[in-house]
Length: 464
Image (cartoon, rainbow, N blue to C red; front, side):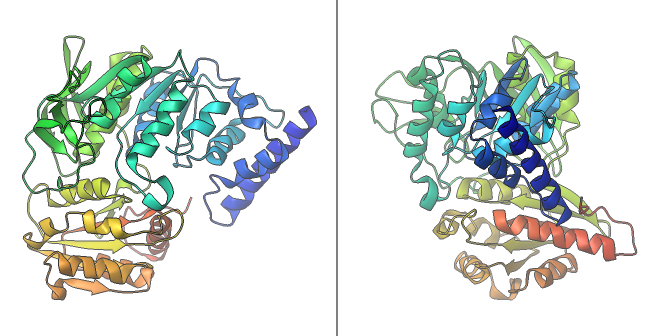
């Protein structure tokens, strides 16, 4: 067994080195190689984590929340393993341990912080038992792979039933998440917003949780924050938005940051997260709650979250010729709507918008979800120019036209490099890139190449 384990780790490390050498991220392949040689490698390595495993799952926010939690623990002085680049299938989780392991299979780690794909959650938890599970939200996402939301909720509920000692960190504002307290009977910490007046018409048309998960009655909302997140109650049974132990009040959404007063245990603390959007505030609240559950000092939590740097494609910010450039991954209507809300937020100015849409397996072959995104809110917004590209760039351009956007504001280029250059060379004061998963890294690589080619100061991503 020791020989197989050593061979598996050596193969994984070699594949990782080879992938990086060829310019790829190599985030899942090392785990795939190692598991083929030694299928039991993951539980053997994970068993060496000294203090516990924290898992994050849900539709949106897994990568950002996971990285925030890892940052909180690192700030507290702990040694942490995490899959920070978002490789969240069982092969990616395995690869995270392979990279931190010695050749002989030794792990020096206090905590493992692992984001886990929703459909992979039962399989991963069968091999690695988490002490804390963070559930972010549930939206429709890649219907050709994930089916309807209720199917995913059922899979996760079944997996949680096998973890009687796990603690849950739950989004109180999402009824699809909040239901897990009653359905599992596990110890829970809730987080959410303490009131927020959303600007009308900024992407709240598509809502998943119309009915009570217990009695089937139509839920009544006293306030919507975005999608189905809000202040809800059931008229037919006691189910309602639970009281949250961690809440954000006095929220101010800035162009590049989000500020709020976080209320917990009758205490109040000011928190500014250097990432725009209400969704990033939710991510920060989840990380704050996880930190409290792990008894991390508040000073360490605030310091970690207030200095957080968004990772690849999660409203990542660059500058190009002194223009701010925002790179954002989009994969479902709820996430795209929040990205558009960030585009429309703040002082009005001219903006160039690149939309790179692919339909490969990792993106989801079915792109009909684009018709559920509230692009109509852009028709009334002036001073926006659009550049469509990717395998389904034509469909994206058509969707914008049907949203009421004038065709003279819509450009189309099948060559992604050309589209990126046109967007950056536009007359806008800011540039926003929205890409599906398989378009994200090609766009990022194009930006990196441009950084190497340029003879001017700029803050574009490196190729490392």
